[in-house]
Image (cartoon, rainbow, N blue to C red; front, side):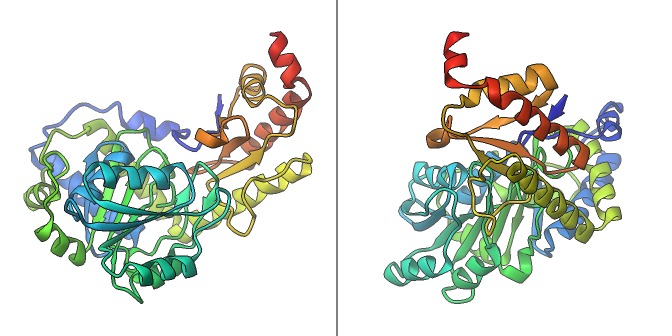
Length: 366
């Protein structure tokens, strides 16, 4: 099976095998060694000296932790969104009682830093800005460095970043850019199954924590901070996934993060070039194109569901469809983590083969 969704992604065999090891005491010295080692390695990947924690959670849990640990009900928040996951970040803040101003950009385009600047000029009481670095629903990579230069450099607001599909796949300089909180998750470029989330927390974020009135228990980062000092998690961790994380981080750092980023950039270029070779249109402008996922416009008269089904049943290639308002309008090819040129060519061949038979008429006749 050639799994080409933007998460979960294929997991290398040796990492899967690492998860089969015997359980250990998560309150004992063996686990403490793994916890400290993986935490230090995560900081290298995130390019941060900030506190960094591992949560047994999905990425959405880390996004929720970012909100719950820095804000209070009634705080003004600016959400800059270019898709489904940017909207989710805003939804979480609203559910917790924040007063959210939604700065929405056309899907398929990136955040415009000048528009963010104007919004912050108009609303000086904004406490935090929410940004999704890499939006997998639209295959757009925002220029986080440029956005951060406005949010932090010009206005000194809290910058809360959804880096779930960018961290360890795209350059993300947490400290240099001034990101106060970055959330990430294991099922993306880390080459791991779902189940772990990672979060960085700056000194400014800790000062905001001191003022925060949001309710929190499982995601209370003060508990993670206190327990990390004694080499333990506050709650029962996914021990097997921690074994896998330890191995995966070692592999990434041995390869070198610069090489990892270039590998993603190369495979992204290959995918976009292949899509155009088939005579298909990219959904996102190549100026903003993500190197972790490519969104392809579904041609008129083609049923996206039928196309995806044929690619899987006849070629073993698993593609993703569009989400929400893009349902039926795009298909998505994931290429984060360890992905080869051969796997992309196989996916492109599956699309080419399925297209002539994935018409709306043939779908209706089935």
